[in-house]
Length: 286
Ligand code: MN
Ligand code: MN
Image (cartoon, rainbow, N blue to C red; front, side, top):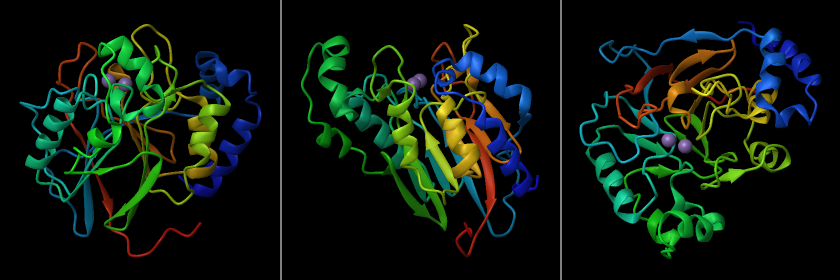
């Protein structure tokens, strides 16, 4: 997969996508998918020894407070792409933090999802009224309960030489936390993502990868895929949110991981996804 060749073809594909089309993910993907290939890929088996000089990443998402019997493979870096709780209540955040504390991974990186109501200050008054009986909450204090991980909210971190960026936003979905309308509002969030990212974590999927709902609709963000294919080009994009979209795909440039642990029925039956990356000594030239 020549990076140069795929860059040119992706740029050409996106020239034809109008701002109106971005509002209609299903039709967007009907057009876009005719011009690119999506292949299913597989992660590494947890029983396969890591190759010399590699870093092992273990991906979870959408555990929704159902971590009691979760069997998490060993690795160097644990990634969790949001919806670790059901409502973001302090007791749930505390329980999740204790679960993280029991895991052996050297680094644990976590973002929020639409279920972490208390983490989204702007929407909390509204969501609290709907879901938590109007309880007030100190968002900073709840966030401070996450002591056993690196929490990312529209920011990057670097671990073991890999640059990782995390963002909780997704296209509007029944007025939960971190919802934004398709178009300008989400584009502004994706524009914040730097170019030199190795692994991108978002809560929601991009269009066309791990975003097909049982209803037949596509929930993915068209603008997110545009940014990924034409500018950011991360090695991996790890997300969740659409539980039934669990699995791995590639467009030949980036590997897309829907790591949803809970199924459509909210049972934690979908195993963590594992991948290895060769260690790196210097920054990617870009
Ligand atoms: Mn979820
Ligand atoms: Mn979600």
